[in-house]
Image 1 (cartoon, chains in turn yellow, brown):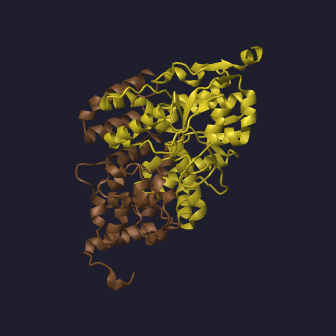
Image 2: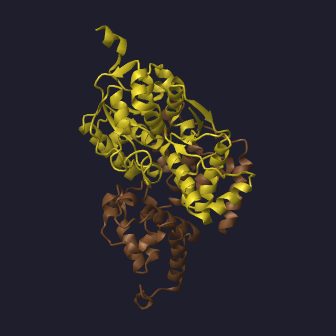
Image 3: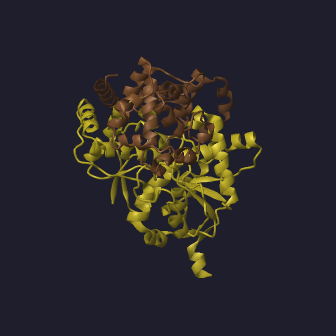
Length: 294
Length: 196
């Protein structure tokens, strides 16, 4: 199995632990990730507010480069994932938009005539690798660790792809297979506010405080995420939330790939566990060997 | 709707209306906006509607009433975080999120913004980073935005920045891609095609 890897800007820095853990987990499972050479920013939601054509054309440069690599794209950031898929969709839906995008690409001597698919690592791990394989390959398990699966919004919306719009279960199943006790988390696809943390901080702090309160109420000891923006808002701003609302949140926010990596017995530092702001105290990680021996 | 029933509009309103409709009706399934039944599912589903001065349902109502300029002056379109919850719940299949994006583009194009809420500054700063480096530069973007909007927040955000930096999660310098000229050529050509 081989994918053209599109890390996206967040994974270079603020979400480095996500990048590290995706690469390590894929390597351990024998899946090749070839980074798209000289990839550029997908434009995120920002360019969409200025010009649709420019937004899609900028995103499409990455698609054009990936096409010549001859494999589908793996994009871990929910926002990049949505934008790249959206550009792809408009290219096949709307001939007017397509012609403009192709013409813009031509200005850089690029062509994009054979569509590549854009996949999320959660989709690849559960649907291509499979839960059975993951369970078999895991050397350790999370002995009843209570985890709230937080998918975020753009991984399942606006168009149904690999999981349900309202109640996705892929991450639930993955975490269960690793021995975790997945708690029912009603906010699993509720928006964290994304860039609102910069533009309207008071709104985003409120949204994230609610997410943390609801996760705590459901009994979670840790929240697992699949998106850099969700992770950053929930983790990086937890201290500010505590200060503003007089709360005592101390909720570790980890990437689902970090948990999977730990279960595969990959060293914690290689998964970026040491660069988390809220470090988990006890993930109840136990070796399967001991379980057999006992 | 028969023409005689349309509300009386100023020339400016008519002009904005035409630009908006061209954008919205032009996209696939865009014409479904005509089917809005004003049920309010979009507002009910929206996680941030309680902070909006005009709710998503009211956006459609005001448009129908010929008050598009009021919409453009509202904070609503800039508060939308584009989570697409409304889009998947709308019983009439209206692309609500895309409609709000179209309004954002119209607002930027016509330079109509809510008072004291210069959110568009972030879009513009982001876009300028992309043009310069080919990638986003988080620290530069944050500082530039706060300087332009609320310099006091630079102080209250310093703790967060330092904690990220200490963990190697915030770059102090931008990453520039090798073929940034390609990105610039694409942007230039796309803008030319859009007439902007």
